[in-house]
Length: 149
Image (cartoon, rainbow, N blue to C red; front, side, top):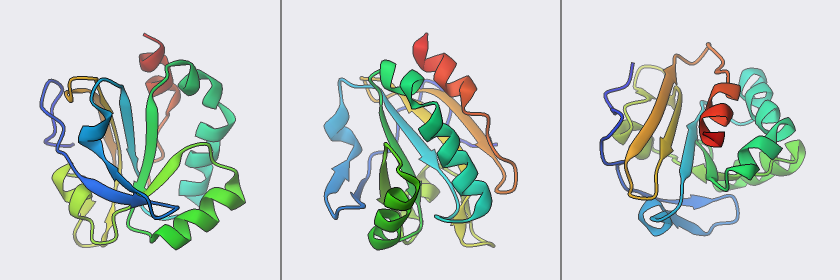
């Protein structure tokens, strides 16, 4: 269970995406943002999760939310993963787990982010959250339904 609570201000951050561009959460004020923390690119469970989002993305896209995947992998690994899986979302490199720690999904023992999803409204407040341990795949259809309101 995460310590990030609904109604709380989402912790700000700046990370690079798969193209090397900086992404700062605060720059998306006024928009809905979804952060999807996951352990590793190319691992079978993470690939399955991200491909489920890709395959059902029309529901996510209809919400006009900005969706970002975040893991400890590098921008280079993210670029290869995004291309190989044809993912419609940006992937952010949290190589030291600093952002995962802010969102309380970092597994210090294993050295990776657990599966945490956070929906952030245009005012920068967390409006929905789910946190699963690494082996437990999330059902993102629940998030998609939440985004459709």
